[in-house]
Length: 334
Image 1 (tube, rainbow, N blue to C red):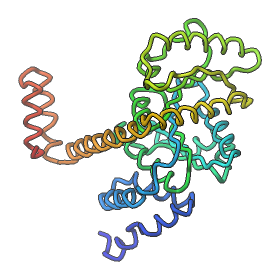
Image 2 (cartoon, rainbow, N blue to C red; image 1 turned 30 degrees about the vertical axis):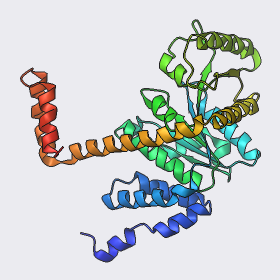
Image 3 (cartoon, rainbow, N blue to C red; image 1 turned 90 degrees about the horizontal axis):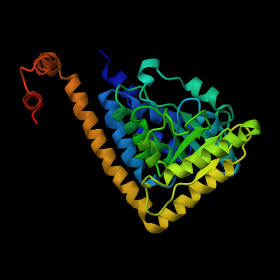
Image 4 (cartoon, rainbow, N blue to C red; image 1 turned 90 degrees about the vertical axis):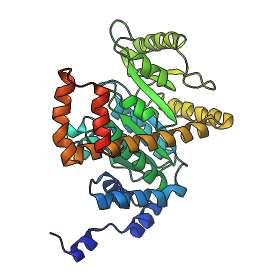
């Protein structure tokens, strides 16, 4: 058992963290994010206090979600876009939402080798998602990491999703602008692209529009434009554009960013951006509540022992799901 002095030494110094974050120190930002990812009860409490303390310094950044199927060039695009932004005087933070990372453990090194220029850029900060068993937990921690980055003076936050499962919805629910990346492919350009993801997009960008592939990229962009005409746009004030670019050569990267700024200007003027952020805050609250209740369910020894019996009874038709939920809720005091 740790002594009282050892516990005191391991307790995070919130004042020092707030000072370091305010000074934009990347090492302190990394320590703060490690704190919010910690599963220790005292660290969780400290993390909540830290985020509350930083709250007045947040909200000033441009939050961009980026998704796309594997192989579309997300990391190369983020490396090119982030480098362009730092050259324009911005400070850029890159966060990742990867609910599958609990299987692989994630890799800071991998994220940095995929974005070599940004990894070496003093005006940039790269952080992979926390390893977590639930998407809700990953998304909640990413939101808190985003606030810490904004408090540290990063005025652009790029949130990358692996492009599988429900991670796109989670990222769209925490960002201002949701960018869907794609490439020209053989046959139907819309094949394998989920309608729901397209409806979330504020813009579709076709990568690898260079050399011999340029014509195919332009043709793919035309097909996406036609498809968008039959879908309901996410915002009444914004018609999602379709653009082509090359992450390899950098051509079109400046245009991508100009569209993000145009979107921000229009939605700020209409009041929709402020409303979207308010709704996101409320969704964040409910997501964290769901995650906390689920954590409690899994951590209570008596409940954990009872769950297999209840599951078997429901599976065999001896107990209705509603009554099983009633029993679990009563055991939790709900």
